[in-house]
Amino acid sequence: MHVLRGVSFAAERGRVYAIVGPSGCGKSTLLYQLGLLDQPDDGQVWINGGLMSVADDGRRTAARCRHVGFVFQFHFLLLEFTALENVMLPMRKLARLTPPAMEERALGLLAVVGLGDKARRAAAHLSGGEQQRVAVARALANEPTAILADEPTGNLDARNSGLVFDLLTSLARQNGQTVVLVTHNPEMAARCDDVRPMRDGQFVR
Image (tube, rainbow, N blue to C red; front, side, top):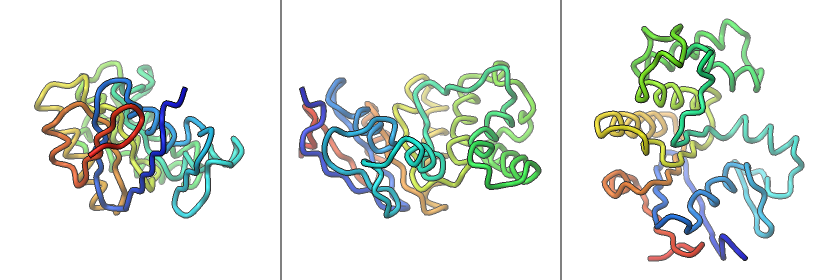
């Protein structure tokens, strides 16, 4: 059984893409292929000029750490860690900056998402909207080429949904990154630069 069939997708820097369609049509599977979480049985995945679909696990992990930031429906924060520590985790994995530089960048990102005053608060003591904003800051930590978001506002109220979407898209456009967003929200999709409807594992028009 093929979950995806003949899908071809290219994302450009500075643009926001929405992938929409009914549950089970292949949207999340495509996102996980793009983010190197799953490996395709056929076809190719290129990121920033590098062929990743045939790379070994070590190269895929390194490329994912450097080039991809994820925001999921559930924030997946370490709740016993502070907001600051959660944002610093990807930077520690990449090990490109010194610890003081990591902390400075993480504090700056938390300030950008409106949580500068809660940087040292445990994630467990933040609201759902605040936790998702920490997840956005974490996704941006390593200045990735692409930000992949799977229903990132699915558990948020209308106000926080709009805030998280605006943060993702405005920061990505400012930094020349691409955002690929899986969503069931038609209003959110309509605000993206390009909308790609899917059905039965294929793009449709």
